[in-house]
Length: 270
Image (cartoon, rainbow, N blue to C red; front, side, top):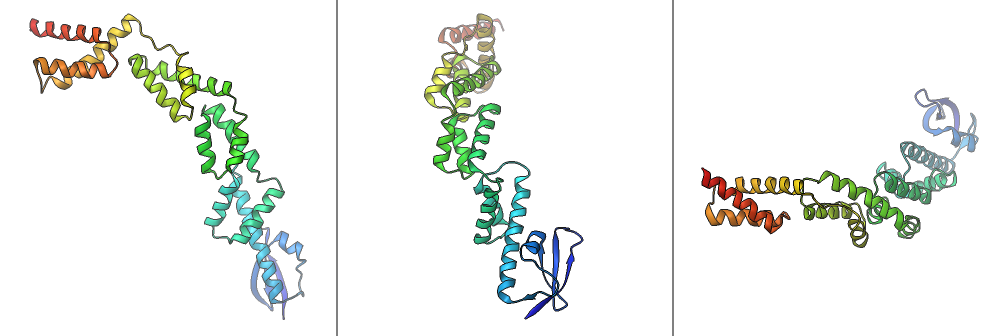
């Protein structure tokens, strides 16, 4: 039976110790494992004890790697398990490390989920559907997802959606009301809000345009369409294509006709 003949502390990692059996280096262990098994010089070491100590040390290594991974931000149990798997720790070792993390309070999926929901709804103003998708990616169980999302009230959802809608409306003042409405709908949908809530929010957003704004929008859309088609078309075909483009952009028929008439007069003057 082998005997521990020397124990030395590693220079690069002061928490790890090198174990020598019969004057030959055999393995290293974390300080906690050294203390747990009472490893001392002169202690006999059989194969069974060596295997148990090595297994315990693997758990300690996995635990410490997980702690380092968690030091950057909160993570779900699924994320930590995936990370340890990528580091090639065995399934049994990973499960033991996760159990220790939970026991010591370093890993708590419910606290993680609550924090993630709060962050997304208070900083990025995401809706329930987008948050739910993010939680799925993190491996949070569906039952826990729904439990935490129940605290995201309809009033909070409406307030967040309205903030996003007002921001979108303000940045699209040079677009027609129909274009602006569509952009708001798309933005809120991407953020994970329901169709019904989006419609409720749209009813509170002012997307009307005054006369000066309508004139500027009509001229901008019309001129772009005119320049696009005038090199290949003329007469009725040119007018028809410009009209179609302007109509698709949400320009009223009356304003389209006025623009076409203005362009015809410009052509006649030339």
